[in-house]
Length: 269
Image (tube, rainbow, N blue to C red; front, top):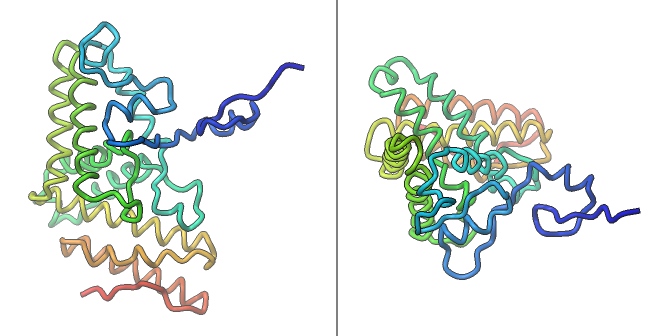
């Protein structure tokens, strides 16, 4: 019989059956030395991601009129898991795309008095773009030991790559306009100086809190994620804080039904 072994997404030798089972897994590459977007793009195991180049050639992102390289790169948001849950043994938790999708739908349900003050179209775009850089950077958490300025540098250079070279040649300049808007929306979220960005930051935290409670309930009391509960106190707007307070009451009722008080539960004013 022929050899049925293959290389899996993590580079290890696996069976064809295992290869098929792991098609939805594209690990974030580990970069040796100084992190650059060029190294990250070239190290991604998915063969569909076009490496970054600084010279315009027939095959480089900066000269291509096709959006396919960008479309393929977006798949990494679907295959990259949110890392915070892995420390608790949740190996097949939500992806970055899962998180941003629910955020966009949560944003659409802003309470009427708040919604009247928001550019909702801008908010939804922000929900869908704010973690886009994690397609190549990965989901860096506070326990990973990457300083915040370095995390910000990696994400900003990745967004420059995605919204610049990768989209520059699409539709004879149309891609440049789209890239500029994506970059602007992402930067607005990072700067956190507008009402829309404050709202989306709150929605980001609300989505995390929802997932925390859902995993705890599904774990039937065997998974305690209380260390994430504090983010409710970091929410800025009274309307979203009210959502969080109601959710924490729901969480408390669940843990009390298990004969325990909820760990890490903050006091909401």
